[in-house]
Length: 315
Length: 296
Image: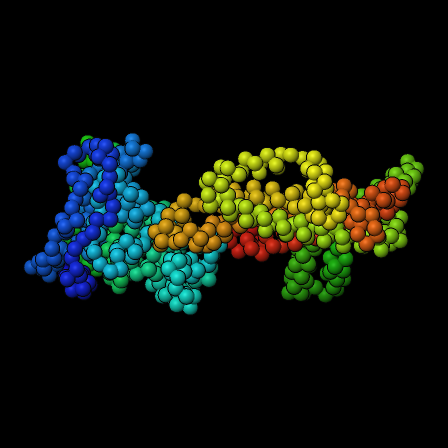
């Protein structure tokens, strides 16, 4: 489907072929009465250990189903009351760029927090592919606002995940500098967050996420507060960086154009309670450029996603 | 002021003003003018105000015929300060020592207690009400109890100073440690930071502005604690008498100019403490904290 991505997909694929079991990480021992919160009723709480993911089957185009993470009937309610997510099933392939889009209150951010392990599902399971080191240890999270430490310079901010991981100073600063160069902020490494514009802060935040060489990058509306021009530029840069590092992405957004431009698949969520309404493939070839936005195919896809979203909004 | 006048004269005196020359001169005058107005605001204005105050002071003494034992003139205060310099100096040293010990123990104790209160909800719920209770009890009531336990002398004086500085530091630092940004906490959790990493690299630096606020309040209160401690627990022997005790003696002996002189010395100690803490706050915060944004 996306021939340009074959390179790194195959690369990681080979390493993964022998090791295709998955583990359930959460939700297995949920209390039965809590599962009643799930409206669907058909979801299974007790997915057995052996029910792994679809095996790797090299498809004709060279594309393989190589799941990194599978969500099985994931439910989340807070205080046992407010149902935020109901029965979410989603398979995330290695190399996927998934955009989560939907109206406010459809649980997009909650879904991201579940994947990050910041919160536990009320029911259902998140099955990560079993590999060493575990995917959960190779996550990076880019928050809605840049979430920088104001008392640290750009480079020290970017190096913070490595400092937490216990990497010694010279090594972590070297790696941080590489990531700063990658996002085009080489000149600002010694500046403090308050000296930077919103777009620059977001670049710092992305650089920080890249330091840990993530297998899965979670982005919670990272460009939501930026103007459209800056957002477009950062969209392009994000894809350029991805060409080099090849992480899988789960990207929450409110913008249809952004979702279509970035994603290989757009997941449309419906609100109250949050659930998956539609999953749309975006069959535009990578690398995508500003010209991609002007193509007819792009316009058609934006329309398609907009319609799906419209359906969600108006029943 | 003088500079400006000189420069103004120079511009007026220049007999052959080619256009270029005039421009250069007026530019210079302008620059000096700017400098002067800034200096005037910062130094000149307070000095002018001080001079006016001094004039009112002396005029009041002359007009209302105020005796020296009610309001001595400034030169008499300076004289008295010079005459009593040995007593005032050793008093100032004693008080500064008490201030330093009280201040630093309260800083260390305050930080330790704040970290404890911030790291455990149980500790906070259990201990904090009693800290507030102790804070509400006036130091005047606590002081006799402290003297009862520790006796007259430096231990009691520093304990009183400690108690007076302790609460603003604990209250502010605890508040700071408990108001860490939730997203930043999530960030540290995503990268699997241990709780001490989170404390050391996120919560403590984040609480720094709050801590500095507490420290500034404590610094201003420190001499008050030490001087009050002196008046209730001070020792009379010449080398042990703190400034508070010296004040009591001067007051009893009706040495009014010397009393005023000791007020100036106490004021200087207060300035030293507050100044150093402000410097520390500036040094730790000016690069990143919004409170120093206007200084750039």
